[in-house]
Length: 86
Image (cartoon, rainbow, N blue to C red):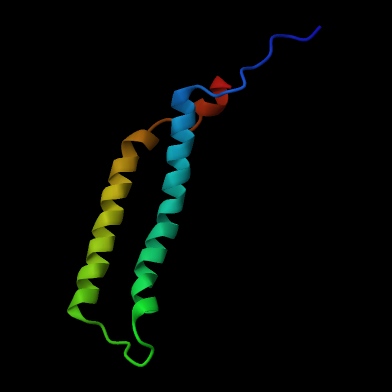
């Protein structure tokens, strides 16, 4: 006979921690896309940096910092516990 079956679904806390880690891993990709975006909408002949571009870059930079700070408490201290609970 087999032993007791493992539950099909994960507990909420480890699942949320894993999804939060996945989102944190995608944060640099999001930042890169947001920072490259002005190059896509600028005409090819005109590659000068305007005041609006500088404001946009600093806004994206601040947004990424705030988003990383929002992710940080959920990422703290749970690195190895997920695998031990399974």
